[in-house]
Length: 180
Image (tube, rainbow, N blue to C red; front, side, top):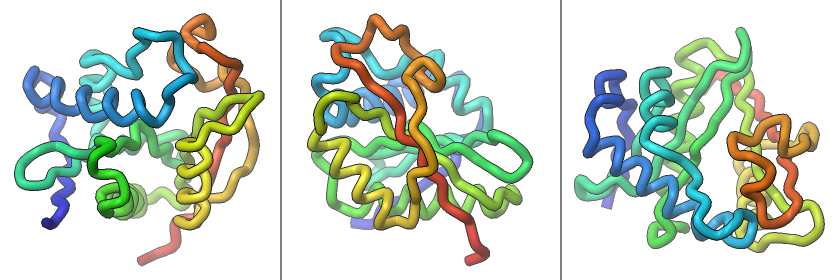
């Protein structure tokens, strides 16, 4: 099976079915990948947040056999740096290469837009080691990302601190984007 990665056009922000599909992917991935970090019932994203990301021009969706199985969003931070967010692969596809293909496509998009640095953040608990977060940290490092700092949840978080089930912080990673 070949993973196809597509950059969604801004018009897709008005496609309720497409929005629901991307929201499903993100929430499924984060429900497992962030289990225990959030108060029960907290959803990671909403159709409105995904529509905004699509309108921003950087939402990538990975599909296998016509079904969305992953996504990532590229967003400009400054003249040289782009943020890679909403990185998600449905849990049943973890380890299949979908994530690697999303990163490759996202980094190619960043380079094409003139960015020289990629940044991403990883939410981690402050007081214990989350196995999925530890797995992701190691994987990001294998992909060439380096932790440059930690940041309090309040600095980057999109939810209220009261949505957290445990104290958390973000690890901020960067990677230089050399020409391919």
